[in-house]
Length: 244
Image 1 (cartoon, helix red, strand yellow):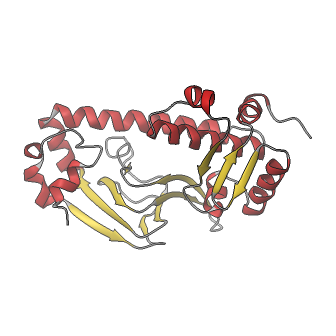
Image 2 (cartoon, rainbow, N blue to C red; image 1 turned 90 degrees about the vertical axis):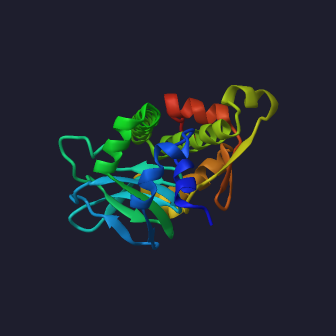
């Protein structure tokens, strides 16, 4: 089993840094095991630090007074939450954070983070990178939800999954297009969770996938979706899809 300092060195906040920079903080850091369906923080709870996901998956949920909810964002291993609130004017969670699967979370208090940031330019640089990535992710989310039709939302989401996948593989959409005409992506969670992430009813999501498959845009095999007509998907996101 890894020591806590080794675990911390694998996180984005301490990536590329030696243990000496944060060794003294290891015994002050806690790891929390949360179970599927457990709520870590409710909307309105004070944000007193940051959480870093070691294992599992969390969801940022927005609940209505009637109990209905929308999934704002999904977080997985390596992701951080709370980083954009602890230094803001309002230091309360604006969403409910819930475990989608059993998860392990590392928590660092605001005071500890402040101390580390003041002592290490490397940690400061990593933290600013995390904040920048968060802004980019929020912009992508806004772009996704601004799509007018269900088909545009789904196509946008699938293309973003593909771009993320290619980036991890060291490829780019342009270079891969020259050698491979069809690519597959795997939904990171169930179709029910994805439909909430796209702010649409689960039956509507399923019907639109069937319709897109019938129109030759995709092929669905469980959680794996083949993008058969990337040009058509990309054009549809920008210009809108023409009625068949």
